[in-house]
Length: 136
Image 1: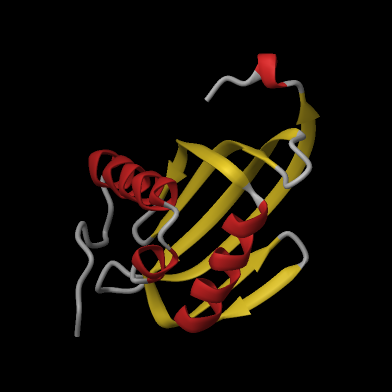
Image 2 (image 1 turned 30 degrees about the vertical axis):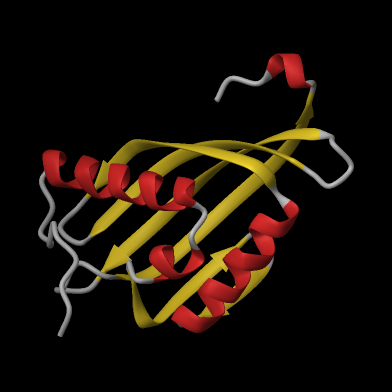
């Protein structure tokens, strides 16, 4: 069975390491690379979309990054326990019409013993911004 270090139980240091790894992977905008951090049957709630498994994750992310152009994400530690991590995040993107947005949200993650994410629950809100107001 493949492992994705660091493994639970998490310390503050390893939780922050896991968050940075996730941020780096998502900023690569490589759906296949990102999907490998999740279990084969990982469960997601992303806004009002429910996703199950790596294949659906990769498909979802491929579509996401076709519509969210110039995507840039920043994740921030919020809390952790033995096999769970909570993060706050924001990301900015431009839509196909050239309008800029900043999305804010929270994610709750749960990991299996191999360090793969079994569950990801994301609550996200979008705010239209002017290009001059970009922060990321």
